[in-house]
Image (cartoon, rainbow, N blue to C red; front, side):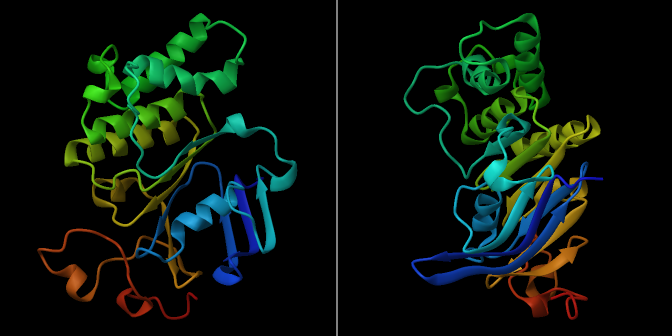
Amino acid sequence: MTPVLEIRHGAVAFGGRPVLRDLNLTVQTGEVVAVLGANGSGKSTLIRAALGLVPLAAGRVELFGVPQRRFTQWRRIGYVPQRIGAGSGVPATVREVVSAGRLAKRGFLRPARKADRQAVTDAIALVGLADRASEPVATLSGGQQQRALIARALAGEPDLLVLDEPTAGVDARSQEAFAGALERFVVGGGTVILVAHELGPLQPVITRAVVVHEGVIAHDGPVPQPAGHHAHPGHDHVHPHAPEEIPGFWGTR
């Protein structure tokens, strides 16, 4: 089976300073892969490099079996970057914002068809915003705005959904809605890669975790269980900070 994403010996450097090195990662259809790590570990840079948003200093990336530099079917990928306001001062409704995600699929010059309108309706329902579809996005909470952005990506009916810190600063209800939406997306044949500092309600949906530590992939396998002070009752999130905090870590580097 052709991988959705394959990175081989990838490296990224900024201003001559190595940020990521010797990255090797393969993601198959139907996986929900969480890229975990502490702030500054390079996890978001890994995703951006995979999508060609930052250049590789070494190595190669393939998307759906095609070298990244020759890949043109970007409509197959839905990307939601780190938290941005969906309102942006423009009085657009939820439906209007989500409809923008359909443009790459139907083309900019073609009018919306019944299938386009249905895809937008389905995407809004999938993230739990059906009752807010006609309301201005600017009136929504931060978590609801983030859900609208995910719906916009889903409206294009991508094969791969890439989310960068989708639940950062988002309320618990929206996190639970995220989890349900991702689960249904995967059941429908999709693949998900998400960057996270903590998983919370998303953890049961994750099929595999990749931990980035000091610029390398330090762990690739099951979601690491919290250890040390992270396992205390008052510490309720999953974000491994160092190899020694990951049970069974040794030998995975």
